[in-house]
Image 1 (tube, rainbow, N blue to C red):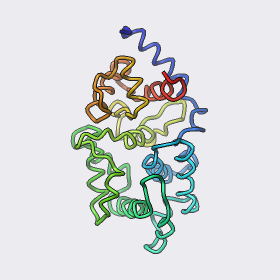
Image 2 (image 1 turned 30 degrees about the vertical axis):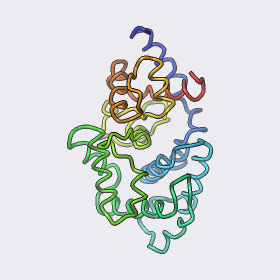
Image 3 (image 1 turned 180 degrees about the horizontal axis):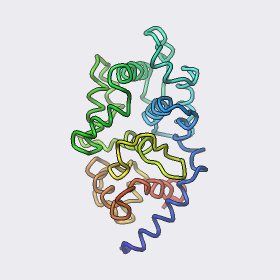
Length: 256
């Protein structure tokens, strides 16, 4: 078993190695980095995170293809598109995320920006309920699915209340709410503190976390997210998810 001090030094070194601008190029976060306006970054970030499973090059290419249909102006599209305009997404496909899912996402985003103050406002209102990311995601889901929608689309917005790991939403929230001088994560949202964020958990971070003794549970579920993040808070209580860079890098690049 690695002692706490040695493990912290190791994780800090790996965080420093991977939390760099060079990391952006081959990562889905490169897509929202195409934009400068806050709302464009938010919308591009959520849509990219939503389809962020599978081959990373395919994720990036398909996220760009999706946004290309808005002429790379997603916020303008949300504010000004008509029902007919949404049909441009009818044939969009990324794995199981299909055209009807995509069209509903745009409708839900229109509702969020027109009636609920935007994505940051929705997530923050949910966060305030219990001062937790779990309550932030749950509130977002309630608003997101408050209109009539195809049942199929629900699988693309994870529910931590049902013990889902919500990897993609936690990744999106890391992008939005966490920031530092490296400028990989955006740090656009100031009302949700980095200390409250939860570590995105997938097969790579889970396997590395178990090998390092940070995670004992076998399932990659919300309880494991809590266990892993609590372990990371022992190394940096103010910014625990910075170690997502370390765990992900060790898993993807080093096959740790």
